[in-house]
Amino acid sequence: MRYRLLFCTLTLLAIFTLIQQRSNLRGFVASEERGGLHGLLQTTFKAPNESSPTSPPIHSDESLTHLLHTVSTTSTYFINYPLLASEFAKMGKRLQVLRDWIEASEGLTHQMTPKQATTLHHQIDATALALFPFLRNPTRSFASSLSHIRDSFRPGSKGIVIPTGQNTFRYACHLVTNLRDALGSKLPIEIVYSGDSDLPSSHRDFITGLGSDVVTVDVLQVFNDTPLDLEHGGWAIKTFAALGSQYEQILVLDADAILLQAPETILDQHKGYQSTGALLFHDRLLWQGEFQERHRWWEQQLEHHTPSEALAKSRVYNEGYAEECDSGLVVLDKSRLPILLGLLHACWQNTKEVRDAWTYRMGHGDKESWWFGLELSGAQYTFEAHYGGMLGSMNTDDNKTCSFTIAHFDERDCLLWYNGSLLKNKLMNATEFDIPTHYMLDGVWEKGATKQDMSC
Image (cartoon, rainbow, N blue to C red; front, side, top):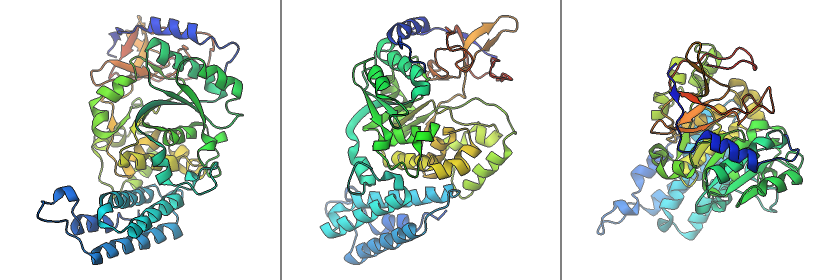
């Protein structure tokens, strides 16, 4: 394996020391086809900025009436004929239609009467609510909607979202200290949980006291939990924590993640993220050819789909490796409509019926739901350039880098973050910490045979 001696602007030793000092836990251990609407919009209307001052947008009352009738008819069909839990591709197509409608309602506002605009707006919200019943906010007496979700985002805002519960609370405290004290990040932080039994008030009080601008959010007060069962959903909370966050641009972090650069650098400097509005990170290249059922299912769902640039470059999809995405860090700009709708698809994949029948059976937890949702809904997204690396120590006997963690890199091939917590092996020893000395990039993984065995 290729390996490099670890050089960091902020040394891991400094991060380790600060986090241990700051987070003394005081005992807490814790297909339809896309349809004709898209073409109709493109051929019947011109956006105002595409027209010359002497040539008004091409439209007519008759064509606008036809557009509204098409939306009404299609909306009724979507509402009356809900999708099966297996119909991932068709959900993607419906979201592409929904995207067309939203863009039409926003782009043609000045060409519609107030009544027409209101009708179209209501049909969009009714359709979205039929596709995603979890959008109903249980704290409101009226039906919530997609428009309410979009309106809840603070314009221009950026923040960090950390889903956690009692089982991962210790790591979440490490992470907050990592962000605030070691890296000096000023981004606001939401700690997201699913009910008092998931994260009691004593835990919430403790973690909000670890740094400034840290708040807690009960996701059960944001979405209708009946189709979700997030209290028992494990990884499923992550997509809903992302959707329900008040921030437009978000970094969704697993509690056991450790950042080696300030998160602001990703939002402000990562060119791939700035281009597409979504940044994902690769898992390791493992088990080539061993998950054929998963690959057949992916190919079935993508049969009539034009691959994105990211999918076209995927070694997992094209070469038969097992897992594409390490979802320990997901970066999204929800102000971009395609990204928001792709996130909605990922949320749908993590509803109880769908995750039990397909998502978690065909993949490991929520991992693949992020890129699959963006892909099927037609959004562009960016993956890191390399597949998962390693951050650990050098085995001098065979010059291999070994550890229990997965490392990730920025566009300059500098270490950005890793998963697995500050512990050497969180699954086996709750008191043994580790300070890595070497990292590996683009090596060949040798997976440990058991939980007690390091990978190299």
